[in-house]
Amino acid sequence: MSVKGTLIPIGGNEDKGTDVHEQYTLEFIADGILARVVQESGGVTAKIVVIPTASSIPDEVSKNYLQAFGKLGCTNVLILDIRKREQSEDKENIEIVRQADCIMFSGGNQSEILRKIGGTSIHTILKERYQNDSIVIAGTSAGAMCMSEEMITGGSSKEAFIKGAVGMSAGMAFIPNLIIDSHFIRRGRFGRLAEAVAIFPDLLGVGLAEDTGLVIKNCNTFEVIGSGMVILFDPSRLKHNNQKVLEKGEPITLQNLKTHILANGDRFNIKKRKLKVLPLDAPFV
Image (cartoon, rainbow, N blue to C red):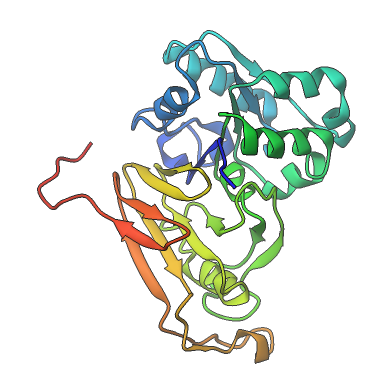
């Protein structure tokens, strides 16, 4: 079935802000990722709704987004500050989501998005509109990680490649084929994403570096945007995977885990699992 909506998961980059914590910053505007969100949403007159539910400081995050979208010339930006689950059943909030051209989830804690929005009327409408309308659903860090059906909730980066390094739960299920992780390079999250695909070997693991995102069309193909890299784990041809038989804390063995390192402009067909990279002489955009 054809999917009309567009997903834009973004890996985050707190170091470009004014504080060490991502929720204090709006970091990806300079490299054009936020501008691409506006473009995909229909331009500066598009109705953009920011949902800072994942953040522990939603007022500050909301202010940053209003300023950033304002700098890009956007004239119709709203904040939908959902702090309690019952607000996801509010008729006015539901109507805002029905009318939005773009929904933008902030960073923070992805589990908060599921706790306050998952399984509610707003969640149902978002899934229906993603299937049937040309809506853009974007998100950075936690807002990106929540997009998948199987969602990473946390896990150790230091104790990499051992069983128990990753926590998993159900996500918002906008896209069933991927498991998404953020801040992937800087925080050394190779091990927990590797375990995630060992647990779910039918899915692709996507590690988004900071300042980096994907534009996913028709739930089928994606384009890499931004200044960093994307690490793609494809476990479809694993010859050995001992994750199920191990005790917690024991090291995992994965044989023949196919890995791609992608950058700006590279494209990937999720269903066919085929990669199209830019020619070597192509200019960096």
